[in-house]
Amino acid sequence: MTASTSSATDAATAAPSPSLAALTGRPAGTPLTRVSLAYVEHRIKLYLRFGEPARTLRLDRWRSVAVFLPNAMFCRIRWESNDYGTIRWQLMVMQACTPLDAAQRIPGVQPGARLLLHAEGDNQVRAVLERIDAIERLGIAPAAASPAYWRTLGNRLAARLPLPEYTAERHAAWLAGRVLP
Image (cartoon, rainbow, N blue to C red; front, side, top):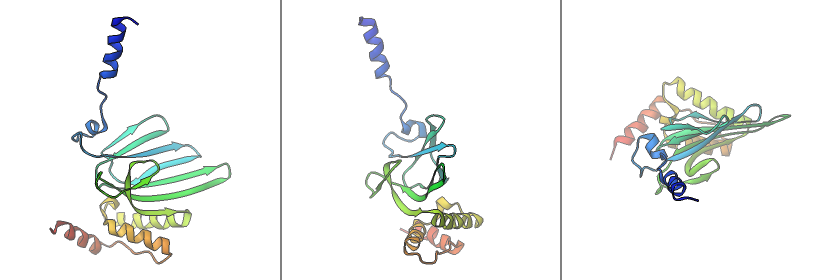
């Protein structure tokens, strides 16, 4: 290898690549949560039902990554099928964390997130989707709903108890509680 080839290789490896923090317009120390998304026709669909990513990066034709800032709430749905039909329905409502928060390791979510609700199976996922639609009909973004509501909904699903409705009064109480010191 010649000196000119060596210096060109060193310059190429030393060139800084844009980080996710730079792509989102935030300081480099901002902890970001990366959520993998995918779509392969008739096989798998991993997508966001709600949530506002700071940035979405398209990796290739089938895959992308949504990047969330700390405390952002989002819902990811996983649908899988084989030659005989649907084999998996999964819905998770999560909240992005900071490195100091308690987080769970979730496949496809790096470095992890706070899991507020986990629904598995056709009936549970449909029940949660109905609640999400009801929240949207109230004019409230589901990502702005109280995290306590999502935890309560997840616990009620697991216990097979009646699911609570999210009301405008509950939302107003949560917003009022956030402004108190």
